[in-house]
Length: 165
Image (cartoon, rainbow, N blue to C red; front, side, top):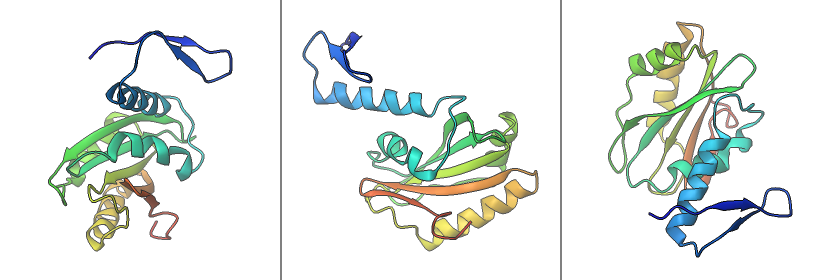
């Protein structure tokens, strides 16, 4: 893939490209921008503040991906990591590995994230069971579970907003 040089545009937040850009180039740039928005030190204030970034990163997978967004006590991002990859409609998630990664990053809290390749972000009963299981495991080591966000091409659903956390 060809690298494009971006120059700052006249208006804030705009860029000029010096050569033709394909759809694949635009998608790659969107993913890079979404990753940048979830980089270390960024403050998270509400679920909707990260929905579009998570959708850009996870909605187009043809298999389930489980990821963790780890934050410090002031809800600043420590890291965003994809942990497990699964099949079309399931991913095996191991609480031990989730806790281990949170401890490695010295996280005060975590946001659980996974996608639904079907596009429908409505949480399943298995999603609710997994959320409780991971919340219990993280509670044992004093790491709060702030949310579990289900990502689909049709949008994102916050289990915290639905009252499950």
